[in-house]
Image 1 (cartoon, rainbow, N blue to C red):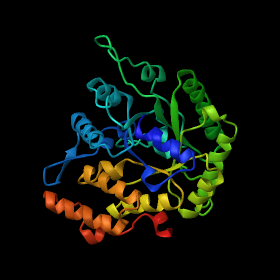
Image 2: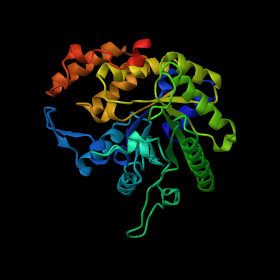
Image 3: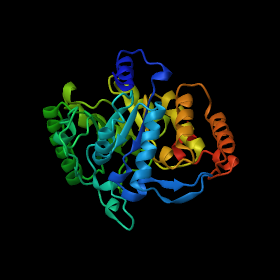
Image 4: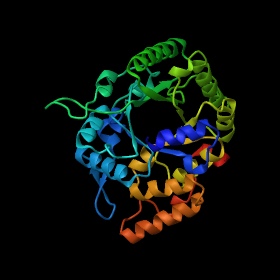
Length: 340
């Protein structure tokens, strides 16, 4: 049993403890921004050296899986196929997951404007390919080897777009049920202006989530949610409504290192039980060091500001030049975090 399943069992049984807080590394950027989503390569001293190649990106994934701290590694099918063929997850307690759909609001390719239109449903991944893995594949056969994926929906207060997204979600659930495939549900904030004021928007998102799941039987419901952190009150409302619905937060932009640790600290305190961070890990000067401190912050062993200072001390010891001065990196820059 992976750590993920053990922790989910304790959370669902009402036996949650801070060390059960789930951390996922979202290394699925190639499904959205593509090359840029793989992050920056760095010299030994931390100096950025352009975009990572696929080989460098896969090396980063291998290193984080080997570190054995995160609970979930979220990747594209193509990269999971490569890593599984190498046996990266064979004896690991880290659960691999794939991005099961790639809606148009994550199409952030250089020069593109797709994300400026209301999100449209789209799915590249084939669950039959993902699920039909074999221990000893024939030469040239594809193997992936996971029964877990991320499915994403964005509501925009647009009846045509939102109904189409919900119909695609229903079709996905049927496909998942046929294959015995589990999923967690990502619900983004609206990706275009939708006529809802900023103060009401977090509660609109909460209502959309609960409304779309109210008609879904227990066997077809998500393992947990992945949503934007829209402040403590909105998170507490959603997490407190139904203890059976496990709420997780997404990382959003890179922000400062204080933003990374503060988001973990506040999310856990206000009822989240999962954090899925992409850019906050992928763009860090030392991804392994930041993951290690994320675990300590989420478990309540160190405060966010102290974690930032420890991170910078580690960078200095390793001879890595930080992207920001310590004083700057200690600032909270993301608006919802200032409420907590």
